[in-house]
Length: 191
Image (cartoon, rainbow, N blue to C red; front, side, top):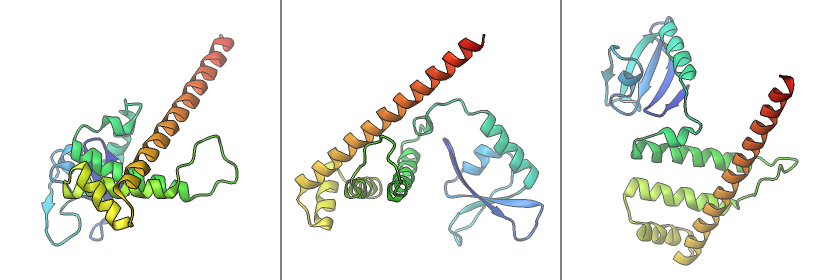
């Protein structure tokens, strides 16, 4: 199970050595301790998750329930304060958005559709900026070269994606406000 928290990313799996415990793993130093203070965390360079701790299943379950009960933000992405962590989470968000777009709904529900090429270019551009630390101009040139397109075409594609994303957010926020309004009216009528 992957757990994305605004201050930690954990991968939780079965502990092969002790069925009463789960193996809580992290890629970033300190993430396990932030969620489970006081546990013994081991570091290894021989595994894909460098930090790990064997923790009682009941302790993990209780902590995850506590974290869920403590959610106080209306938007998870905006609650992530570390820039690097936020950017990494956005890459996952974009990958999942691409998967969502690949799902061909039988009936459109009034959402604007982004051409897949715009989504792919935005993802590729963001990944290059995040991993290679290139300037916007250099990242655009690299994406253009890789896709055999002009930098202007890539700029236009990125602009189209950002416009689509804003329209998507606006339509979701509008639908959310409408549903809250209907819920409030229903509560008022019941009083």
